[in-house]
Length: 84
Image (cartoon, rainbow, N blue to C red):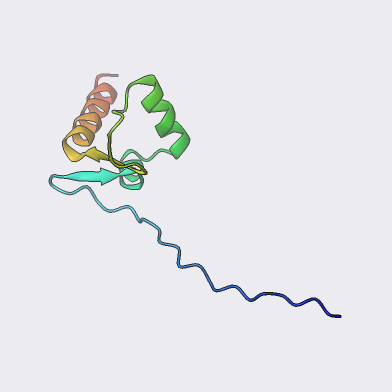
């Protein structure tokens, strides 16, 4: 007897594409990564080291960062590079 295979429906996977920094509000991790220009591992290590703010949980699975915190971090990075 031939084995029957079950046909699967394609997944409707929703992905989040990074957007430019808005004037105010909150952003998610992909936008923060795009603004810093680093990978996810370096970002997570920066949070553990304390130089990146930990953000706030919007839902149990969605962490967001304030745009004002992000801009302050970017300004401090620019000031450190300018002083060096």
